[in-house]
Length: 218
Image 1 (cartoon, one colour):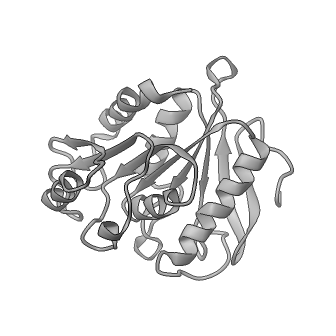
Image 2: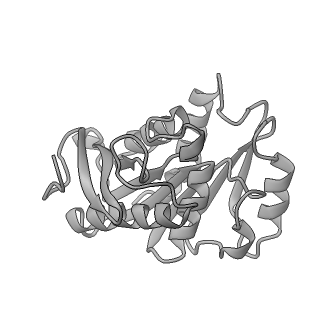
């Protein structure tokens, strides 16, 4: 299915026309009795290190938000899976995200936009939030030492940052220092005993996300 002319009413995989060609997407809907007027678009880790929209952390973030009543969309950046194009050092990936957001908001008008990203995806979503009307941002294990986080403004919306204190990829000390140095800092939660991929802690992460964003549900 290419460029569906509506937001699928049930779980669906499809292709959207993106800036560099087709983008492979996966949308999921909450149970009808739980549905709220909000749509979450979620971003995966670094494509050159095996990141895809089916990453387990991204999947558990999606599940958390869908269980709260949000419609969700995940997608593969350019050059990943069935998505066309080539890796573009974060620049093209931000444009990919904006294309998915534009499609989602066009077909779910009047709903709040939520963004969530894991690792490299946290950088992509924070960059995109500079130009989008985001109502909730979720950043998991943001790689603040690898990308230009210091050059980005905090979002004006509620912002949850989750970091494992035993992360072997992203320095938890660096994340804490960065977050505490922001004028409008995030709600930073350090998860004790969690590594970068939250092995054996995914269910804990699910509960943490739900508990911390519930007050911002529309």
